[in-house]
Image (tube, rainbow, N blue to C red; front, side):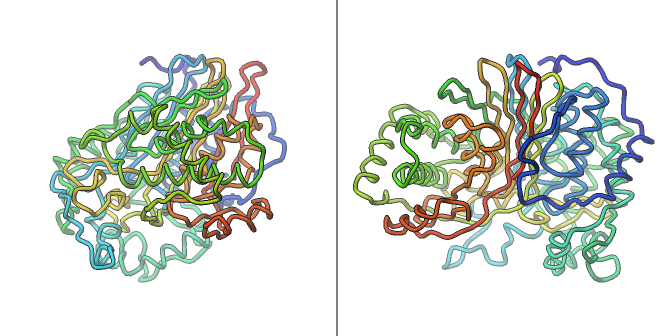
Length: 553
């Protein structure tokens, strides 16, 4: 596929990258908890939204003439350094959506982790309570699969960008070398992982240089990671991370620490450009990353809402009841039936069919009429972490990337001498042999990332994604429902309160949810509590005016 149609920009020099990073490290990298502005300012060059330091680096790329993918890659590489608990270049995976301004090219890039060849369905036996003893599927070297983020970024840049990897990685190198202040949240997460960090040389060197983790506000540097990124910059490619001397060093540390990933596993890894899932409703088309990403569950819920004519229902308890039941049905199917479609048969066509949607709609109408809940069973699990960046450039090319370690610092293990902390992609498998999402050689785990793009009249107008583990699909779904079904503007769509459920009767609602509904929902059988949602970052573009807007909450 040809690159997005923009002229080649002047490269960002190492000196410019250093100056930019010096300015950025003085700024707070904490996420705001409220919408940034009631009225979005004008962004003549486009805008990146998702992580403050990465946003500024991406804005610099856009201002110097880079396109949406150039900004996305540079910003993601920076976020992979300055948000070390959320993600990193050793993070387990990424999902990317890209749309050209004319709408003729809309593609997804799958950079999910793969399990090592030695993985087996029964590799994480559970105890009587259904828990994996020692949480070895979440913490430690067995929890790490092959990391996919770098391969995905390289593929996006090669096919759709205009800059070199060498130029794109310079701000990330400077951040790793010169450091950035630790937030209180990241410092606390580090402190909680001290026992894991002590178990291996890489963890002790990076996180416990003086025997304890650094305090909040301390300048955190990762000189080994800076050297690794510098090597990749000199080679102008990430290939040796997967096939070469760097791959061998990664594999050697896995072997030293009884991990399973080998040099052969790394060499076999490829990120893939794939066709997105598409869903049309009310003159808009939603495009999202396909399985094993979380977008499938969003679209299943949307097909049910469409069959219900949900957008025509008046706001109130009945409409909320129908929405929650559509969510519960989709999540129950997700946790029971979904997995890697390349490894086992998944009933994708059935679950997204009009017939199934109408069947679900009929069941939901009966539940609403009788004031009851549909019988569903599911097993919720906490998932955290992740960064999402949404980007629009001056031409109206849009892109979004979600990239993650998984939970805080992923597997909690770091490759000695490379400063490379690894994500815990293996934790995203179900430790149940026979389940479609059970571990297996070369399998990709089901994950929650679901960057999405909306088109109207064939032109891309919105890029959106979220961070926040299992809450991501529901948060992005709510934003899309507000924007597409209820025709709300970007800021209002992002500001709307969001629900969360994973298929059980337990429902989480944000504090701004209407009080009357909060009081009435328990009488229907829901177990309601107040909780925050995932964080959504979105950008929009008006093809008529050329105006870009951005929102984050």
